[in-house]
Structure formats: C-alpha cells, structure tokens
Amino acid sequence: MQLYDCVYGGFEVTEPLLTKLIESKPVQRLKKISQFGIPSHLCRSGYKAFTRYEHSIGVMFLLRSLGATLEEQAAGLLHDVSHTAFSHIIDYVFGDPSVEDYQDNLHSQVVSESEIPVILARYGLNAESVSNIEKFGLLERPAPDLCADRVDYALREMMGCGRAADACVCYSGLIVNEGKIVFSSLEKAALFANHYARLYEEQWGDADSRARYLLFSEALKAALADETISKTDFKEHDVHVFCKLESSVNPEVKKPLQLLARRTRFQPSSSREATVLPGKFRCVDPLFLEKGKAVRLSSVDLQYAKLIENQRKAYAEGIKVLL
Image (cartoon, rainbow, N blue to C red; front, side, top):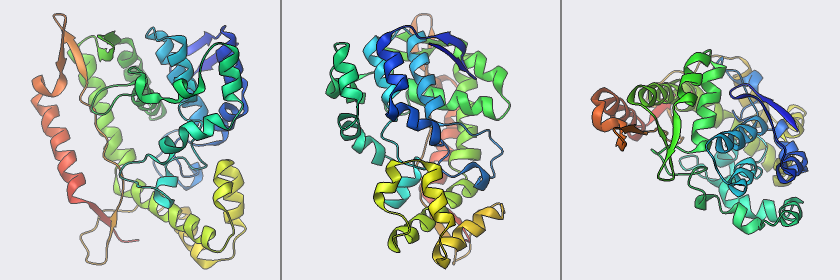
C-alpha cells in the first residue's frame, strides 16, 4: 500500500496487519472527522484543516520511523478510532473540556465492538493489549514530554500555517533515548517548543477558538434537547450530524450557528457579563540530548521557561469573552 503524507512524504506499508487496519471501517470513518472539531467553514484560524485519518496515519508513520514495534504502530493507527463527530467538541457536550478524555474513556469499548479485534487476532495481536494506549511509551506520554500523538498534530499544524520548513527541521531532530522521544539538539527542541506555544496561543487556547467551541457545543446541546439529533448520531461523522443541525428551526440551535457563520473574532473581555471559557491547557517542555545526557529545555532556556509559566498563569486566571 502506497501512502502520501503532507508531513512525512510518500511511504509504503507492506505489513498485512497495517493494511487491513487502514482499510477497516473504523479507520476509514476518520476521513470524515475533522481534527479541529468545528466544521472548517465556521473556523477563523486560517490554518489548513486536516482529518483524524491523516493524523492517525501520521502517528503510525512517525512511530515507524522511530523504530516502534508493529504492535505500537497498530496502536498508533487506531488511537483515535473512538473519536466522535466533531472530535473534542464532545467534551463540551458530555465530558470535561479541561481534560478532553471522553474519547479515551470509550476507546477500548469502541475497538472491541468493531471488526478490529478479528483483524488483530488474525496476526497474533490482542485487542485489549493494543487498546491500552498508556503502555506504549512512544505513542502516548503525559505532558510536558513528547509523544508521537502530540508531535504529529503539532507538526501537521505547523505545515498548515505555512511553517513547513520548520516542521521538517523539527522532524529531522526526533530520536529515541531510553524509550522516550527526545530531540537531538537544543536548537531543534527550542524550535518545536516555541512553535507549540504559539499554536496554543493562536489556535488551541485563544479566546476566539474557545468561544467557537463553546457556541458550537451549545447548538449541539439544544439539538439533543429537542431530539433533532441523538447521542447515537455522534458515532457517525461530522457531515451527518451537521446536516441535521442545519435542518433545525429551533432558535437555540440556529443562533449559535449564525454567530459562528459571521466569522467575527471573539476577543477577551473583562466585562462583568463576559463568559468564562472552558478549555484544556497544553504545553511541552521537551528533552534534548547534550553530550549523551537528556536535558529538559526549560532548565537551560529561561526565556522559554518564562513563556510557559506565563501561559499557565493566564490559563489559571481564565479567559472571558462577550458572546
């Protein structure tokens, strides 16, 4: 199977296990799930949108390039199959947006109820083991460390906002040291970390993005309340659910969508009437090798240490906007 990725270029997958998993319905469904959550025509970021499928293929390839086992590559390919329509918007509807673990909590169940266990068993792997994401140290690791999931979506968004050259430099500096993903130099660690911090400020944690998530979740909640959509619909894909939203005549569904469609940028506000916006804090503090020893970036780059300290403080204080 020949694949092409905007971050890593062309590559071939020859392992029958991986090709069968890629062709499976749960993985193919991810082609209709946006990584950004909100439909792209309701976003203002200007970043090029990409799908959970593209991200999953990217995570698999990144693990592959770092020498991960076939089982970990399979786990990386499958790590997002439990995402519902609109990705992490679901955490604003049913879960906790400060944690974003709704999909994680469903992962084993979604895998077990699909065709995936049969495919895995055919090639000597156990679905329960592959679904245990936390056991794969290259695929997933708590922040602020690097992991394939965190690295791939950041590189992908760097590509999408015109920083392709920097993304390639960062990718070229990734190595494995004592079971962890680290950078080969201070310079590449700092380049990646500063881009990640900028993405948080401009894309993941800014007032406009969080306000849009909240407004869209309000439309979804209203549509659930009047049974325009059901919880089961989220097992489908973005277009399926959005078409139902568009058909609604309920003002509580239509008003948030109309506000989003105006594409007005939501700005932070100190007004007493402003709404405090939920969301998740994201940061990295990568390790890099110096004379064969793993060193934490913030321990030598005090400017970066101050940057993430200020971001963490701003998050704790909360962001408010007038909706």
